[in-house]
View 1 (cartoon, one colour):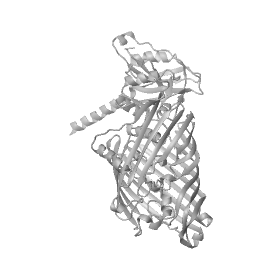
View 2 (view 1 turned 90 degrees about the vertical axis):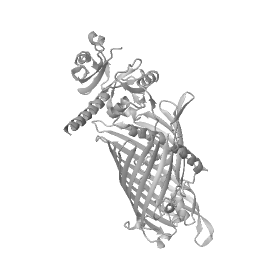
View 3 (view 1 turned 120 degrees about the vertical axis):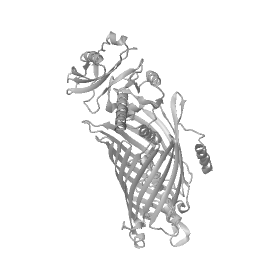
View 4 (view 1 turned 135 degrees about the vertical axis):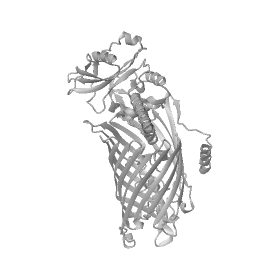
Length: 227
Length: 410
């Protein structure tokens, strides 16, 4: 009996861990016409709920995946809705003349291809997906400070040994940005520590637009050995 | 004919021969989307006939369907239209109507305009009350969403300004809609049908409708609260029996002295549980018989509902709905008709306890089985489900109803 309980707990923990892992494995991509490099979680939700129609003056159009773990992770992490609730929400818009059913595509590759060729398109794919031809939007921590526009971005070095060994993944960092726009502090939240060190070194050189006060943001950087 | 077509469609679904999906096609290099829905219900009551159907014998005269087409003309401009048709006992009678036809221009996220025939925003579900597939319940709480009176609030010919904006300091977000236009009821709707018992037949019923809705997505995750206000100036024209010569007909008109609705609502969603609650007060001071009489009708309704999705295919729900009405006549009729002000009487209230089960057989196809346990029948000068024409033997104080409904959408 005790053994069964242990097994159940272990199974529960495994499921929980996998859901969280999936959530962290989603990245948001946009057509190159979208001027913004960053988007807050709140803005992302408003874009996908068709409440927000532009980002930095560019018209945006949400693109969904039809189903699958990436889709579920995105809904859970960023929209806080189940698939049924989301479909009901879009149906309300469609059947009252207040909105449209976003295009839903069958795979990461289809989403990347569609976003790449469609002005203003914003979608999501798994972290591992190659995103050639589109830009990746950094996502700000929900409920944290207001968005700060990134002015200077320095790409991190990909340590040659890790790249050769195909050690890749996403590094999550918490960044403290001064009112003037300089990065004051970087803290590694998740990911490979060596990649994290490289990412932190690069991010410390980033420069943001001046703001009213010091702000905290969470950013994700992808290290893709195939690129 | 309509029933036969619908019967065939449903038969195909039951046989599993069809799947449904939205249709998209290109027109002048623009994506055009077509969506639709249909539902068919059956109602059985143990005593009074309900919703103008012969429900004490069991009635399937409970059908509706709609189809819409829409497209984006530019990034900011969308156009679309929806046709809707229904038959509910003596109402609707398969006279199709343009449900909405809208041109919508969104200048900014926080400011847009839409014009044409526009769905009216009033509370949580006025604009989606026909969309059976969106709701856990076969019948929304009739104290706030009386299906026999859907046309009183469903749409207006005019315009809306609307928008949504996030609030700073993590205070959530606000969405607003302000509207003005002309409401026009079909003569096959509840109020004209009610009047027909007196030999009064309306040729037109409608008028100015304007209002505002404000809803706040609060910082508490899943909690939405809001308020709506609607004012109306309604005129009816038709003919009535001459009280001095029953073989003669005279022209009949009525118009609003005051007509307003206040609605307050809250919705809380957590996980698979959704809880709704709304309160609506509708005050109608109507001058009747071309100025000879006046009637003040005060309608108050509220409900609390909960629905929980047990599995992907099964959702259970329940609500308690409370409706009261008072009616006071002035002028000539004031001397003849006593005041109806005691809301504890079954004639002036409907208290409805409801349980429901919704089964989603497919993504596009659901079946609902629902039980209503009603006390009161609220037979007044403004209707709410119970009509004397289909209850010639008089009303019983309690009514239990079984509602079975199935619907599809694409």
